[in-house]
Length: 568
Image: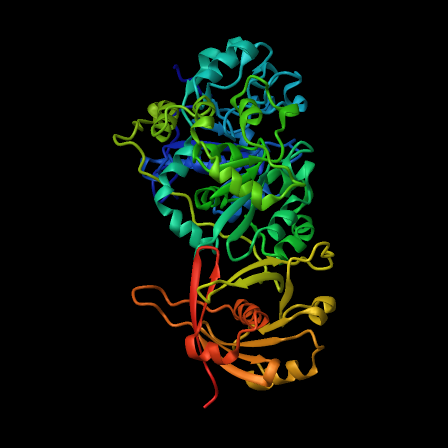
C-alpha cells in the first residue's frame, strides 16, 4: 500500500533530544475506550526504534471528559487538538474515526475500539443501518477516503465495508485484534488475577458486564448487580462489575460509586474503567452480560455465559455480535439467580458460540505483528525498518478492583451433617433493604451501623485485632447488655485465632484453625466461626463436644478444621 506524501522535508534531530526520535506518531482519541486501545497499540512501537509518540483528543464526543487526565496520568505527551493540527506526523492512529481527522497532516490509520464493528450510532454515521466505523460519512470527505489504512479484525468486515463504503475497500487491511491477543497472552496468570480479585479458598467469580445506553444490562436491569451479590452465598462466590467507560464518563465517577454504594457494601467488586476488565475476565468462572465487547470476549474464553440484555435494537443485524445476542443463553433477572448459574454451568457447551466468535476475531496469534506491518511502512522514509522479530507476549496488568470493607451483616443458614461437620451458607444483607423471605438467622460484625440488624442478630463478631477493651471484656459486655437474640459473640485474636463467649452457660472458648501440612495458613473468619457454633448449639450439641473433638466448618467445597480450648 503506497504511503501518502507528507507536507514537509526530512526533519532534523533537535539538539536537546537525548535519544533520537526520527519518526513521530500521533495517537488520536475521542473516548476513553478508544484511548485505552491506543495505549495498547502504541506498545507495539518501541522507542528504541527511534519513534516518538504523542497523543491528542479529537473534540466533539459526548464521552471525552477526563481524557486529558488519563493520558497525562500515564505519562503520555499530550498535545491540544489545535497544536496537533499544526504539526506534521509520519502517522496518526485512531481507534474511532471522525471526519474532522482530515485536518491532521499525517496519514491516518483507523481500527475498531472494541470487538469489531457492531453498533449502530446514527449520530456518527448518519445512516440507520450502518455500523459505526464502516460508514461513508465517517470514512470519506468530498468523495475522498480519509484513512490510509482501515484495520479490520476479521476478513468478513471487508465484505461488510464493501456494502457500506465501496471506495474504502482498497484501504482495508486485516490486522486482527491485539486486545484479544493480550488477553490470550495473559491466560497463564489466571491465579495471579484471581488473587487480585480476592478469589480463593474455593470461591468462584461471577463477572457482570454492562455496556452503555438504554439497551445495556444496567440500562434494562439497574438492580441486577444488587440482586446477584445478595443472592449468591458469599463464601462460595465473589461478584465483580465491569462497566463500559462511557457509563463512567457520562454519569461521572462520583455518581457511579454513589449509585453502587449498597452493592459494594454487600461485597460487589467494581473494576475501574481504565484497566482491569481483561484480567477480571481471565479470572472469571461465569459472565453475566449484554452485547458489550467484554461479554463477547468472554465467549472466546469459553466462560459460562448468560445474557441479561441482548442490545439487538442497536446492533448491525449482519454483525457476529448480533448473532451472539440471538444465540447465547438468557438470564431471567427475576428468577432464582443461583439456580440459573449452576444450571448454565451444567449445560455449558462453549463450542456453541465459538463459530460466532471466530467470525469476529481472525488471524489469532499474529495480531501484534500485523499491526506493526500496517504501521511501519509509514516510517520507511525515516529509515526505520520493520522489527526483525514479532512483538513479545504482553500480559495485561493485575486487576485492582475498587472495594469497601465488605458486608457487615449476613443471613446465615446451616446444618450439622451426619459426620458432625457444620455446613453453612451466608448471604450479604444490604443496608435498609427489607428481608422479605428470611433464609436463616442474622450474623453481624461490630462495624454494622444499621441498628435494626444489630438488635436482631444471633451472632456478633469483632473483626479488628488491635482493639479496646480486651477481647474477654468486650465479649462479656455485649453478651450481658444485648437483647435476648444474641447467642454467640466472637472477637478476633489473630488471622487464625478467635475468642468466643456463648450466652448459654456463659462459656468462654478460644478457637484456633491449625495449619495443615503442606498448605497455606488458614484464615479464621470470626463471623463465620460464630455462625457455625450457633448452628452447632441450635442442633442441641454442646460446648464440651467442641473442646473434645473440634469442629469442621464447610462452605461450598471448602472445609476448615477448628479446635477449641477452654480457659485454664
